Structures are given as structure tokens and as C-alpha cells.
Amino acid sequence: MKPLVLIVEDEAALVTMLRYNLEREGFAVCAASDGEEALVQIAERKPDVVLLDWMLPLVSGIEVCRQIRRAPASRTVPIVMLTARGEEGDRVRGLNSGADDYTVKPFSPAELIARLRAVMRRAQPTSAEEVLRFADLTVDLVAHRVTREGRPIHLGPTEFRLLRFFMQHPGRVFSREQLLDQVWGHDVYVEARTVDVHIRRLRKAINFAGVTDLVRTVRGAGYALDNAG
Image (cartoon, rainbow, N blue to C red; front, top):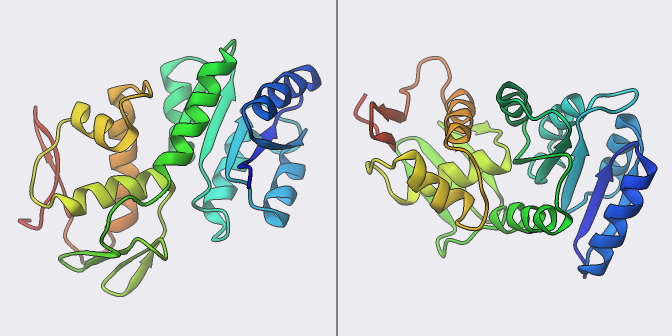
């Protein structure tokens, strides 16, 4: 079955170009021209990946991204934001809203397709173990479910992969560069600052009142999953 890409973009010419290139590379394509239509389509037929423009009529791309991440049925769908906004603050805002990757216009169709394939690949569990446990944290790789003290934890796909990697190597400190290689992959360019954004999101998700912060920051070295605190 061909992987389904939902293109959320209000420029018809750009949608036509993207559809042509994606279908030529073996993808199935559907499209929405505004944020409201995108959310309806996602609810009706969950895509394998969403290519999401930042500037949209009715509901902004940032808000669409947030709503995708809040809905249980679509929480794990990979999202690549497509936008003309290239400043670092904009990229960080896009990542903070739940995007997995970020492509700035103008772009190379070949690079964009490589990014789509990469976020889809990274969303797939690779561990032979089905359930990972550390302290009071449990990750079910098959059900894609995370709990702490029996309480459900909702993670986006990038935070899920980051936590999975940490739980496979508890106590070990990893630099930003090592995490980029292991969690994002060698074939995709992502800035080191991206790691900090996703670490903050992971911390916010797994730590709640009365529990220990399991993600340790080692100044000048990186991050580790550690129960020492």
C-alpha cells in the first residue's frame, strides 16, 4: 500500500507540483487548502505523514499542528512544516507546536521527499523489545503507549523516539550531536538547537507534580535518563 501524504497548502500551483513529485516517488496524495479542511480529512482518514504550510486560511498551520498532537487518533502522525518563515525563532516555534521537521521555501522537491521518508522511518519502532521500563516509567513499543506511575503520558513522535532511545541506554550521557545521529538519523540535517526543544517537550510531558525529573542535563556534555535526583 502506498504511504499517504496529506498536503495542507493554499497555493494551488505548489500543491500541483508537490502532488506530481510525490506520486512519481510512489506516494498517495490528498490535499487540503485550509486548516479546517485539513483537520476534517485527518479525522476521516489518518495520513502517514502531513506536509503542513505555516500560513493557512481559517486555522493557522501552527494551530493545526497543535490540534493534531492533542487528538489521540493523530498524535503520532509525523508532521513536516513547509513555510517561507526561516528565522530561528520561527523554526523553534514550529517545533514547539509539535512539528517533527521544518522545510523553508524555496525548497528542493528531492530534499523534501527525503525529509518525508525520514520522519516516516523514524516514527517506526525498531527495538526488538516490546516494553521498556525505567524507574516508574513504562514504554509499550507495540501499542505506542507511555505511562508513569500508571498515568498515561502523551508524546509526539519525536519525543517518543527520544524517550525510547534514552530508555534503551539508561544512565548514559549523550551529546546533542549523538542524539541527532541516533534519533533523527545521519541522512537528515537538523540543527543541534532542535534537540533542546524536544528535550524540553519530553521533560514537560513525563514530569508532573510529585515525581522526579528523570532527564538529567549535564552541562557541556549533553543529556541522560537518570533517576539519581
